[in-house]
Image 1 (cartoon, rainbow, N blue to C red):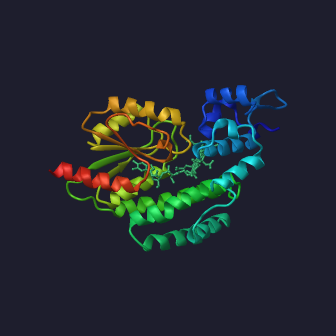
Image 2: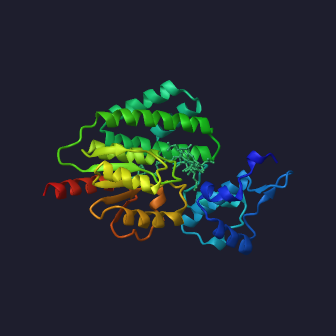
Image 3: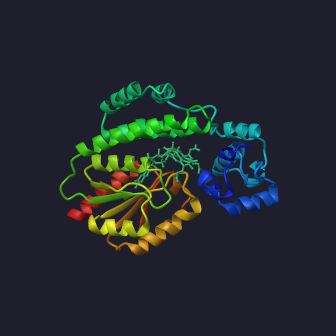
Length: 302
Ligand code: B12
């Protein structure tokens, strides 16, 4: 099998969010996942194994126990996903999400951007992010994992959304006395769209926002937060970020930053954090951040 079809054991955590130690335990107990060996002797996991691992992860998040799902065939896993309505093969997309995905499939950039813009004009920036972009990006992830769209079409979508949001954020006016919020993702987290969406919502609500983008080392985060005189450091962790690393990263950052500086954290990757470290606020939903902003603005004024 050509090398590019195998995912090396060291990349498995990045690909699936499942740690190597956990996978070793599963292998010992259930005989899955097994690595394949190429003609040149190198070992790795096939795309099919990765797909099954992602299905297993979703089923465990959906309440199944490991013994009920690990080692099951792909068909069986898909059947179980269907049973809890998480089946990637029958997406629950709205008609407008469907239309956007269709234009992406045709790689029709101009019509894709025109349709996006039409949605933007239909309401506030906050509504656009919540009602159009968030479902669209999730649908892109689903379509990509089902191999319905190629990676270049996903990039096309990412680029168009980024371009539109950058332009919109530039038009936002910060309100007098509102907090300064520094946006970034920590090292190893290259997914920055969720962060940009959070920035757009908070800029729309009057925050003064500064975005230094993805993959920023701890010490640079600390320096940037100080030099930008930030009231809040806003971080994003995607679904891809290894769940067991989120809390230690937050604990470390809390110790690095002055206590007066708030830390707000969002993204699909925070769903697994049961107890946030003291002085860190988690926002599984973007809507809750608007209330937190108004609350902080009141405290700053008063
Ligand atoms: C776009 C994308 C990419 C782009 C990112 C480009 C960019 N500039 O961001 C690129 C191509 C770089 C990429 C790379 C990879 N990706 Co990717 N990617 C995605 C995709 C389609 C969207 C990710 C995203 O931006 N989500 C943002 C929003 C929609 O999600 P969210 O985190 O829930 O955030 C919402 C809220 O929580 C809130 N929010 C977010 N942050 C914050 C912060 C604050 C403060 C607040 C208040 C709120 C808030 O706002 C959002 C909107 O409501 C997802 C699919 C998905 N469903 O997420 C896959 C996905 C995350 N990627 C995946 C994978 C595997 C990868 C790669 C490993 C692929 C590879 N082999 O290289 C790499 C890893 C890169 C890395 N080191 O991290 C997998 C992860 C699987 C897993 N580990 O469990 C996913 C789930 C796709 C899939 N279905 O398999 N990816």
